[in-house]
Length: 255
Image (cartoon, rainbow, N blue to C red):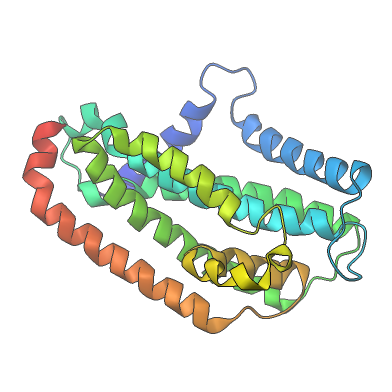
């Protein structure tokens, strides 16, 4: 896929989200803005949720938004990449496209949405007098790693979905369960010590924990878990390419 094709697919993906609406792309800003405002109002003003320790009135809202925005980018990338081959079947049959690169437009589109959310989140942090530090730059490579994993997983599931349409339904269920298995709306310290080991079974936990460590606690994230996540991502990328070469002909025939 050429850069021009990728840019076209990405632009079309963003446009199609709000096709026919009067405000168009403005909704790209409105949805994250409303979500963040609701989180802040509900959890800080109404429920008065607090993090364990003395981290301030808005610490829990910061904790929640930091993890939730990243999770939404990842889960949307996986779920939408899973459907990408089916959705673009009519184009694939008419235009020569490198299929492994097709889900990349989903990755870029969700990255744009995340960046918009991050800008709105940044305005909130400025308003509450947040102490910005150099550690925040670590968000960039961590997010890049996260989205690479989302692409690799979505590519594999997308190919399987062509042959078995139940895959996309199963992905929706698994992502919902995966969300609640990940400390995003709750802190990991509420999990009993005897069950804390279960977090090691959650592949995305080191990434979400890294956002919390950087944004909320102003600490550098643990390196070893992130390296393990990177190694797992590399395995998924290799597996995805191997699987594609095995099923490419059947994949195009089914589409």
